[in-house]
Length: 424
Image (cartoon, rainbow, N blue to C red; front, side, top):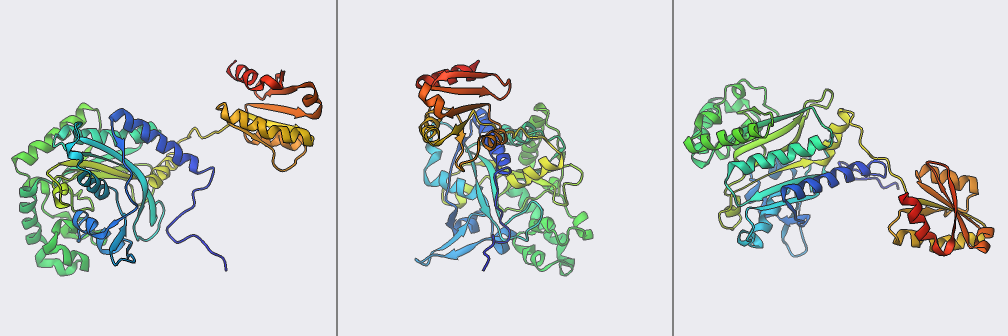
């Protein structure tokens, strides 16, 4: 019987994983500059966390969560997104009491949703996300968006489109909700069962429906922007002002809803405008979630964040044909001739590595020509050749692969002399 990988998952092999490492490294560098600190949360949480935060009318909760019962009869769920876990941790560890506010966090790790696998979309996928919790200043909304845009641009992406919207505060949403119900109710029978179920529970979710997106009532649906109260309008205007100050181009789209119930005020998506990227163009999504900390038992602490898929990030880089600096090299490859020399290189290899150099040797008893080919394949900067005659003379030959220059150095001071050659 042949055992294969589960559908909707992937192996990320050497040669490909370097792209992931590059993105992760760049994300960490940016977070340090923006003063976001890493948080690592469990891969599974109590199911109730996602029911209360993500919302029981969302596709994620209704159709996509991997939920199971453990041996103690507790309902647990593999995390489908990262915000709920980060906010739960914020509340549980009383981070609202930290001297430094707002609390600025980032995370990186696998998420799980039972979706139909397609290009750039998997059932296990990796998200990078940030959360800024504890401030209702619209300037931090702009900062969060700027961080996401900076990450994409720092990796070479150019064809990006930022969409922003305001979902308003509770009063604005209540007024908009009533208008949506009155708009859809007379013809709700023409919509899918999900939309029918959401009409009374959360009619805004209808606007996010993929199945009925081309229905004529979708195009004429009341806009949330027409129902924003003065506070919500002023807040959204500030966010737009700050984005302009940061020279970040954007488009206001009143139909942008986002797929999670906890959003209010600012909502945004970053999309790829690259030709041939695919039907699903969203790279990143986020927004403000004032009220979420209270929903899961904590004090009032307004927050905003975003999450992006590393898989879709890589797909966008490939669509734009961005040439990533992935060429790897090692500092020294040890070539040995004879049994005694082969044994000697075991210790020599460890000395190089402990001195801070990347190094390798042959483990297949290959001939000297094949060892040199292996050094070429590993893109070695130097090759050190050791044979039985060299051991007797307490010498080793070091060759620069770039210049071809060879230097004979004493074995007893090899690391010291190699360092001198490496730095010259």
